[in-house]
Image (cartoon, rainbow, N blue to C red; front, top):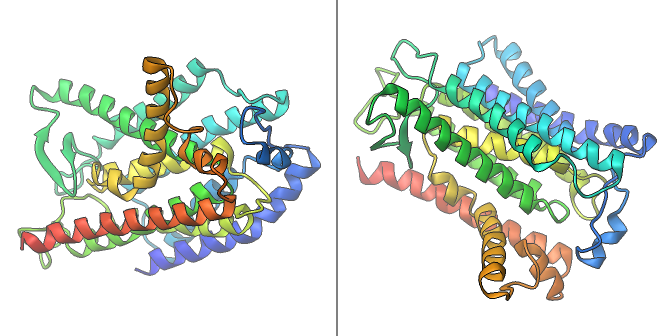
Length: 361
């Protein structure tokens, strides 16, 4: 438990006091956000605001994880390292995208194909390695079984190990792409994605701690409802570091934002949430925990689908937050209300997680 608290505290402090230093660095180099002309007109005042702030979130998370383990003299685990690799790898792809936007002063960064290749390559390495490294209990960081709150009977390896690996890679790619794009679409208003991610990461801190206390790897604690998760406590440390980093960054990212996280942050945060879901065996529960991201991504799908099929738009503008902007809601009002929705979804997800354990006792 000490490692969890240390990780959260260090990440918070580093992000809170490191972000203004990073802002000064970006301002000196004129690394400001490019604003699309077809977006809400109120956003034009944000042109030139420093971006790529996700680098601070990633750096603070990695440093906090290392400090937590050095302080407690504990070894890092494979599960946590893989999740951090996924976060950092996707963050680098996002950084390249942001840098091209800034240097060329355009809304389009990386072309679609290179961006997809970069994301897919990072997700592929994560997925393949996540099925390796069994511990003494023969548990690997991930499983080929589809999970909700724990592994279900639906196993992707039903037709053999080779096909199971292939199907799991595809499944992991879909999860990682969906989550990272969901966070990316949510990152349209000051502090919106940062605050929502903080809540989901906080939920995973509690999930990891609970799974550790009820782990099948402990003879004293093992029972019929124990969790087959390889490194639950260390995954809680990662989640705590992410939560602390987002909290500190939110101080500067809240309206009016002094810095944006950019694709560097949104892709990284989406990746770490997907990685936590896969390694804690709560893959489909993430749909509830991150319900706000799902709703915002769904609004884009509905808008595009409706326009292509009928020529009519369902919303004034997609993603969903911009619909409410054009309806006359103030940006701060939208953000706070969406935070409330995000908190309710995270609470519902935690409730379902705990209810499953209680009902099956």
